[in-house]
Image 1: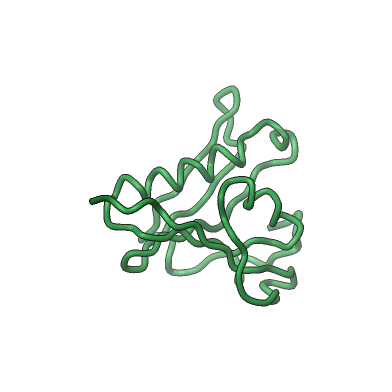
Image 2 (image 1 turned 135 degrees about the vertical axis):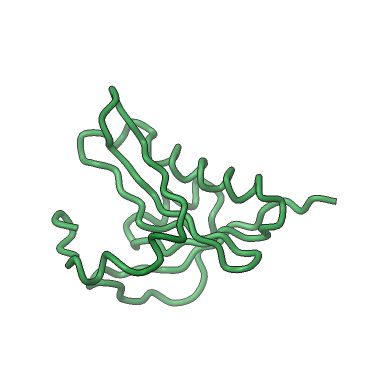
Length: 122
């Protein structure tokens, strides 16, 4: 929140209690997090954050892969979505997400929606 200038009012909402929260540790210290929510057959990964000292370690990609695995394990999720800051589009594309729709402002930061279709289970 501080690094990106996001207010507490914009960051905290009533969805936290219904979410699964991922926590990434480095030497037993919290270094990254992500929030997982469901809407029917769609999973949403949000509130992704990795502290500066852990960036470049693969931690962010591990958080996203863990989120995808969580939704895939549910067996009834078709699509995983996220809202990506424009500078991070390439990061998410490498993990299989595709951008769609126009850029929009979220908390003063330009974003685009991205989605990843999960393999269907027959």
